[in-house]
Image 1: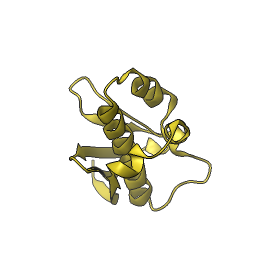
Image 2: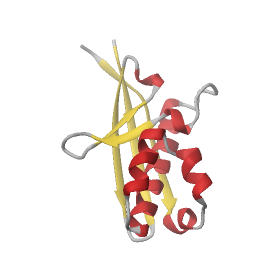
Image 3: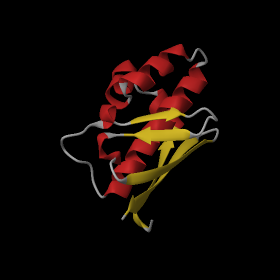
Image 4: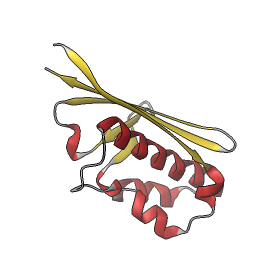
Length: 120
């Protein structure tokens, strides 16, 4: 099977910016599955990093896709760890695509990286 790169995207999020948001922001950005996990995180800094990482990946996904399908919103996209802890992105747009995701956090930033491959 031949694959071609449909797009790549990267986004950097300032953790301080996320720290200054309210709970409504988390509810607008996180899918129901992500939000349920987010609510279980007790450490406030870990909650900020989780939210910032998901926001960064969703922004990166939008860039890699070439713009966001107006019929979708961030809550339609979910980034959850697999059995080994690797982030896996699921969305209604995944059909026929392999989506590679990476998230990293530093003391002040979170970075999301997405590469989308389209198979023949």
